[in-house]
Length: 473
Image (cartoon, one colour):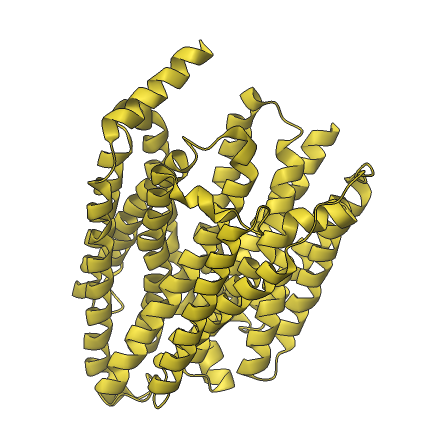
């Protein structure tokens, strides 16, 4: 095996481990809640803490690789992730589990940008589409297989075993990295780290997510609003400072480009909202309807198949029809799939549930693949690395906000109905109504992107695509 294939294999293994860890935990939430006496708000932090760790560390990835070397940082990240996985499996309380998940995110957050950078620089531009297809396949297999696998593990063993599952994969990636990766050549000059920007941005993200979670917790509405306002002030200060710096941690000026900005907003409003709906659906199907964890997890299989079909369709039709009709179709289909969940009131409606997940998968796949294809069309080559960092931060924030906002909505509606626990069968009928309200409101959020689509000059995008195609010929 030549060197670049070895590097690609290590990157794909790290990518797979990171994605599995992100998607496998939601199916275990009911069991974790029972075992650790955790509220819905605390359960939401199991995912939010992981994504928070990812989001905090991604902006510093380029500087860390330049200062310490890609191989060293990649191996340190894998070792951090491995140790945190063991810690999460041994966690004696929900607070300890959330803390270990954040550490997991700090380790896992560097695997994707570092691995991607190390791999792509070894492939010529003409070879990268084939590499991207393999990455896309891994990106679909992990969300499809991990909930089903996690459900089987939870039903057969324990929720703790889903965290131990990460250990052999991370250990294998660490061993291969130690044996196969070459050290970076020495650099004459290391770029300066924007320490102030890193601290301010991380603080803003933490306060915003903490405030949203607190607002959904009974008795903490006012305190949560205060924390949320403080987070908004920190975010405003960070953005203002970044726009004044010549070399900021993130070049936020790039978001002024209309296509990149619209693509980022589409990702927030469609795939991001689905992450929150996925969490609520797992709680509803298992906690209220009594579905087994393995059955609930298997519903991601039709979602993944439909997503793959949508991504394939986007690749074939994007240059012909442009982003606008694909965005519109994707947003409407995602909303339709969420509305299909309103008719689910029994665990035996598997055919209908599979259809709902397939419709959501197809709609979400159309929007996410179209957004990815649109984001960097007008970005200069010299700004691609910074634009990619901004894009990935936005993607992670979308997942965070989708989970946080829908958790706040669910907790608020449950409290308003006097429902204190999903364990009480006498409250299941009213709880089902609350979940249905949440699904309906989430579906309405997916229609908001239609206003963004109206601002896309579809003809100009098609002309740009045809111009690039003619230039290559």
